[in-house]
Length: 408
Image (tube, rainbow, N blue to C red; front, side):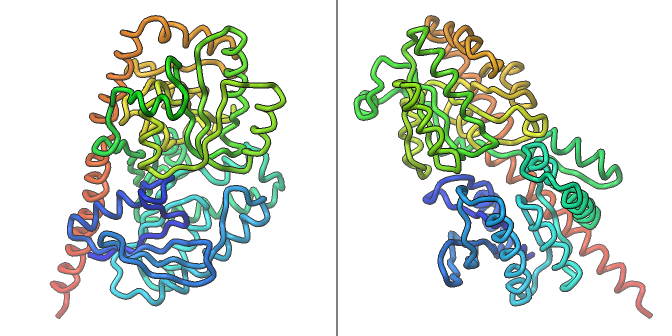
């Protein structure tokens, strides 16, 4: 069995960031499935690496979170064209696994199916074009209509659709009621991230001794709307709470947020550059609560944020400013809380019991780790995908046997 895996932003643990595709690809390789990845890098030449049994083809397509809309579109289009060319060079592929965003990845898979006869599974991380439409990135109604038709076409021709959250699954099923949609959410790496007692040396290094640390880690973009975090930090300062807020990452909004922190003299907010997985673990050691942030748009309530799952594995109190399934888990499993981001004082009220009652904080952190272990462990999610790949292999084998038996 050989899988062609397409992900424009494939990352390894050493590189940091969203490494779901690394885990899934490695899981397939460990189960005897050959995986060849097509991704991109910011160099001017193609490169091929063997990463723990995964053959990774790096295409020269520049992309950064700070790019404007038109440059992002160009990057998506260039990658789509180069993927199809590279796919023609890769032989003996049984199945294509294509993961969005962007939606153009689905178009690549569709073209590969038509040109090379390779069926595809389409993994939906974000609902395009609905997400950029609600965020105001796509305003032209003709472009919107075109992308909606493309979305429908990609879903229709997929062998299976993989959704990363219950909300995404429900919305796709509304659009394609006859299509099989499977749920494989992001994963908690409970083997790597573990609850730890705070290291006094790290507390001194990060200057957070006797402080309650709230950390945001991930992309710093428009969709994340970290102005909400700054408002909560400002309210905390006024209430004289012993809180420190870390913003860990990079993105298009970093410069704006840095200006706002200086302008409003938010002395309890600190920026930390993007970190790989090992360094993030050090920062999480001194962290008490993880902050999950999105703009107030209904479509973003369906997201499956990586930061949430790493925080669960680390046993952190979860603070979310968005409704949806993350809020539901926090409330149902008593591992965190939701607050109204338009009312920063609500944050102050809800965080105070965890500052005063250390047992309550400890219980919520224990619950957080339990959710990561029992619902979202890497092992559970990889097994789901292996099951889907094996079912496809069995189906293909049965069809081939049937065709042979019908020959005269």
